[in-house]
Structures are given as structure tokens and as C-alpha cells.
Length: 220
Image 1: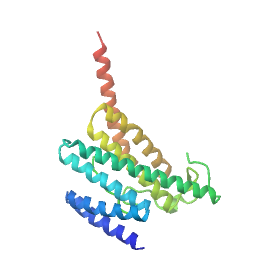
Image 2: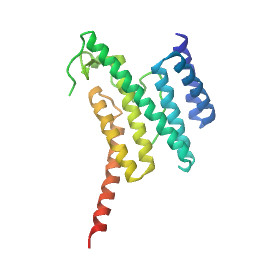
Image 3: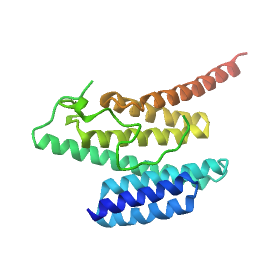
Image 4: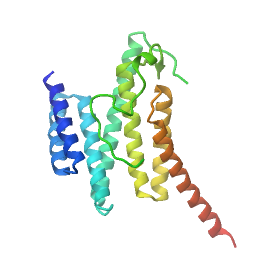
């Protein structure tokens, strides 16, 4: 209980500092929270604050006009770590569901956001709508949606980081992340998929322009 209340408080303070572009304060709050969650082996809290540290470094990199490569690398590292934690949580949930006999068949803008503990504005539809559905063998409910939504959001944010670079190689790195995020959203009826689709279109245009220019350069 105390750790959950601390998480709420830390996220609120960090969110306030982040909104004001007070990056030092945000990183201090999230860094302290990360240390605590690692000590408590609280993977959910660790994943959230790790993602938020990535978002803070991401915005810092943008504010620096993308001149500080260390901030980009730091953001990428934190994003990837938060994605790994979400995958781990989903696999644990799936294994638990299988062991308990609840498994089933698998169902067929440029802003930088941070995570809070609730599902938030970009979350899935009501849990009542998801009753009886399964995703990857897991009965979808408040916990299942929470993990799937976070994984999708983290994949999207890492793709956004790569898209912000604006190079072909970065676009190639972003595309599979967006495609995976969209697959998760399709399974869980996540309304954020429209934003991800827009970014995927941007990446496709970037790659198409590059392929067209390469073809023209090869013409005699």
C-alpha cells in the first residue's frame, strides 16, 4: 500500500515538473522512484518510471534541437527497458492464465507523454466491453488491458523517438514498432491506434521518398 501511494505521489510530482519542462526535477523524482521500485522488486512501478525517464530524456533531446546525442541514447535505453518489462509482465500474465485454465485462442502527433497509473485518455474502452475476450490466451480485463496498453504506448513512443531523427535508417527502425503497437491496439480496441497510424503513414512516406530518390539516382 505504501509503495503504491508513493508511486502515485511520485508520478504526480514528476508529471508536474515534466509539464513545466523542469527536467532536472522530473528526473530526480523518477530516479528516486526507480531506485525504490528496484529495491522492492516492483516491476510495474519500475516499468512506469523507466518509461517516464525515457520520455524526459526524449523531450530534453528535442528541446536541445537534437544536438545532444547522449540524451537520445538515454531516451532509447529507457524506452527499450520499459518495453522489456511490459513484455515480461504480459508473459507472466499469460503463463498465469494458462496455469489457472483460463487460456483461450488469440483474438484475431508528435507529443511526448508520460505514464500515470490509470489507463488515461489513450486507453482501451471499458472493461465491460472486453468481458469474455482473450488476447494471446489471456482473458482481457483491467489487468490485461493495462499491460497491453502500456506495451503498445511504449512501442509507439520509441517509434516516435526514431521518427524524430528523420533519417531512413531511423524510419526503418520505427516501422516494425508501430506495426506491433497497432496489432496490440487492434486486439484491445485501443483508441490510440489513430495516432499510431498517422505516424506509420509519415514513416512510410519517408521510406517511399528515399526509395524513389534512390531509383532516380540509378537512372542513366
